[in-house]
Image (cartoon, rainbow, N blue to C red; front, side, top):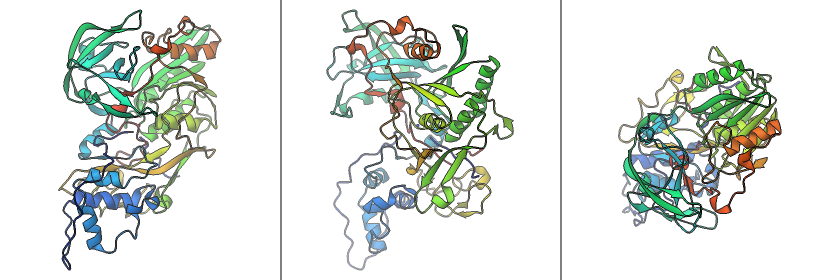
Length: 509
């Protein structure tokens, strides 16, 4: 069995523009050797040519695209920056590949470390409609500036630094024009509002300045046991799959097991993804009766599939630490349009083995995996238990030699996070690019968010209803269509690299 790799949660620190450089093509004089002007361009093309899953479908990445080295170098020199080149060689199928100009930021993000003021929000239309935008606070990160300022779930902001937010969208809901970049600086002031009984958005004169800081967020937001009608229901709200979080997750599952829970509600509504190895282990914790059986598999391009194409199996340990197993044959999952990647891995890969009941909204649809590529063309290494091979660019773990960073090109810090493979479950199903469909559809509503992990929160109440057969007041009240939250964007979507299904090598345990 090959060592399980990592999956990671869509969008980049550098997120690429889709425009080619407008500079005039560089034409060398006859018999003059062309010198590459930007080494990062050379790395970008060669790394994508080697690992990109759609390499054979992109003309500019074709092996015979260039007549000679001068032709190749001339092509590269037509792009003033690697991100412009990167955009030009992406497949139309690709929604998630990314490029960053500082791999330190990338590695921090993959470990769950990033700058935030602590406000996790969704951006939606106000009840009045139009192009205006309001932000609704979903939750606040512990230890953040927002927590210090007593911002809480359900608070609504309509402006930043006194400027009202707006976003124009096309017929498919994609943003075509906006001022949402007002939310990007490290420090800004949020201007808050309230929704009146007449469904009007009215400023409430609350204005709070917030500053972002580097924080490691605990992905376990809530873990508790609820007893309803004599049924013990475990509730676990898990908001990401960062590297190195497996022991804490195993402990949380162990605590629920010690409570002798009958059912589990896994809340992934805001979880954009993370480490696939953590997702694999979570599947194994939820079950326990399938250890050693095939959980899922992935396919790479023809250059690398024989080496890196792999199968994941249900496991029973984290290194030498035994997993806590719940041995469930049914799982209730709360998932929404901000649920992606490793979260979808859990849902899709458990489906052939146990009943997975999906409550909420259609998920993002991320059935692809990526790796981290750095400018180190000469390294070697290999999957655990296999001979060392020449493995250009791919970020290797410490146990495989960890030559990647030490021997990387010192002249730049660009890194790529391209799609390199396609994932499927043990039954061979992996085509859910349109998202995983809910069994019971329900969205969050302005003015009726409830408290996460508490009865009275509608999505949790719906899951409880399906377990116990007892309905809740939160589900009986009529809901105005104007108050239903229809996601335009969110803090999850605006996080660097969120949602990338990652099958990386840095940090293999």
